[in-house]
Amino acid sequence: MQQRPWPKRLLLLLLFMAPGFLRAQYIGPPAVLALLGEWHVGLTQVPSDLKGVATDGPRRALGVSFPFRIVPAWQLRVRYDDGLFSGSQSFTSGPANATATTSVKQRQASLDAVYSPGGDRWTMHRPYLYAGAGLGIMQTWHERTLMGYVAMPGLPPATQEQTWSPVGRLFLGVQVFRSVALEAQFQSSTHRFEGVRYTDACATLGLRVWPAVLFARDASARPD
Image (tube, rainbow, N blue to C red; front, top):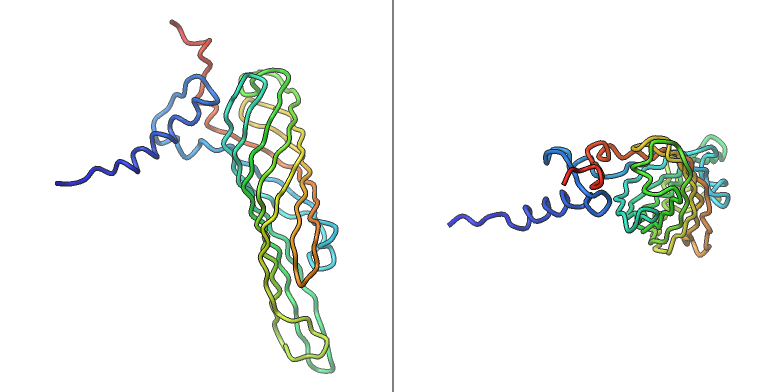
């Protein structure tokens, strides 16, 4: 007897039902499941404590979140974000040279509370502000690799270290359209590398896009 893939079907069902927490009704075939996430793309500044090892200037920030409506003015966002900072330093000793490349990779899972005083921010038809805060856990991977003459005196050693730490953030956004928001956030976390504790405080400016909201409608708009 062939067993039915109940776990897979249950997962698909839960994913399909997820927008119901946010919206009263979801319209669309299962093919739109890939659009459930609210996607975030933006630029983040290099944390001040990393400017000596990471290239100055803004770096990319990517993330995805899943928003759930509690009441019209309050939502929760379950989110995942990652970021990457990197930079290189050159060392020379006579005819020999070497390069030390440092990279700091950050991955985080967190929960945001979003307050929109104008009501459910996905049903409004005019731009307005929303704000909130979030807490989560950050994984930071700090690594240094060497190329060239690695036996050069004074060259820092190749090493890598992983740190888990809490992360907190504050954010302010403008819901421009039903599916597009412009959001600025400030977040802070810490990590250790070679016995030194770093405080990674940085600001990010980006867009939040949730295509699936275009398939949703309010229960109040549904005929009885």
